[in-house]
Length: 460
Image (cartoon, rainbow, N blue to C red; front, side):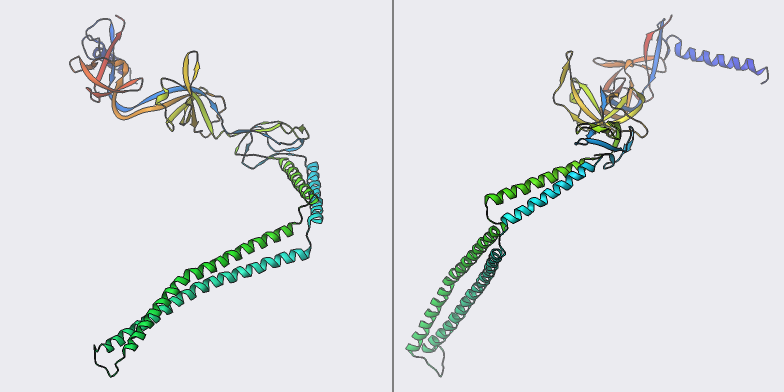
């Protein structure tokens, strides 16, 4: 750089700095002292943006899905297939006991059950002839029931046919009667003229046909009821035949038979217990998770209650927060929450209110309510149980609103701000809205881009 340019640059810088000082710090001008010596003004621009009201509460991280896994049966550890920190999947084998003795117990229980079953068959088994006779009675009862149902169908059909035939006969006799009566009275000329006796005979036939139809109609429900009763009786006979057959097949209810049956039941229970112990010798993961601890090594002895594997699922984490009584009514189920942990101050986690206790706790005169927050983990971030965290419940949110920092507002009735104008400053009334603790919404009285000021003590 040429030497003659350096003084020019210095002069330009001094002019810029001096001009800035003159604009912002000279008495009686916007951004200055407002005419009062010994004060310095702060200036803020009215901005449009988003405000949020938050309620904060502290708590500790919990991992709700965890399990202290035991074999549930004592023995010697054969293999351990996981280590602390290993990630496992649901159903994955974690460890196994030696199973030789357990398998022998299952084999012995199976043999005992077989022996008990043979003994029961010998004591209570009925003869083949009795069983055959009882089964034959059931078959005969089934045939009788089928015949009774078929008779019922035929009875209904024949009753309808009888009525139809009686109706047709009645219609025929009425036609004959009408014809004879008309001829007898000479209503129309005919080569045949019936006598009085012919007319009376036709009328008698009509009366008899009406009576026959009435009898057919009255007989139908009685015939059907009798047939239905026969079906019901056949069904009852079949039921009794089946009960008799089952009793014959089951054998006599003697004391020896009951004792043999009880021995079979006991042998079945013993076999189930032996098989259950063998199944417990293999420890599997009940859910996806991470191994937090391992309680024994291969060839070591364990009790049925020994915690072999402590498994946790860090993919599901919750913050157990205590919310102050003055804030609890603003917290709702399903509400969105921001979560920060002391160990990760620069990482923001998302959460949601999962549960709220209706019962508060009182400590040192302060009442708070337990609130459970489900926290969404982040990839690559390993959260630990017990971490201290701060939750921010979003209880109010407004977007695209005008606001200024709280310190620039003089609250009261009315609330006012000092506005920087082109000629100096002026006090202006404003209508206030949401306050997020740092900034306050301006509903009326200011526009975007305007500047407000507040005087603070400074050096003379």
